[in-house]
Length: 160
Image (tube, rainbow, N blue to C red; front, side, top):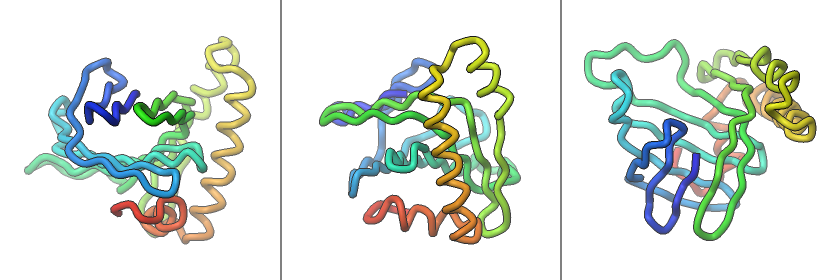
């Protein structure tokens, strides 16, 4: 995924360019939101890019009549590169879902293992992902599984 700050658009993982409705950068983190037009159940999405934590936090608003997912937050453990014109996000395979104030669950460890075996992810990137996971899980425990509180710590000054 690549966020173009000048053109205010994001190149999604599907390769399609989407306009960004709102974008804010503060304290080394970014928030952006956009319409979820390509997804049949998602009306709107918000993302917080947290380079210091090595992750992207996602919250979806469902289309009218669609049931919400059984979790409130989806967190991608990703590599994030920043410049004045673009922020680039690289998938590092691990994900975490969070039920606000209740629990979190790590997903896709098998995908990371397979990517390492297939040399699709370099060992330093895999190690960075595991270290990010450790810091993220520690922060979630410290904040009693509250992503809202986590964002207050790692993305101060951005919308929540």
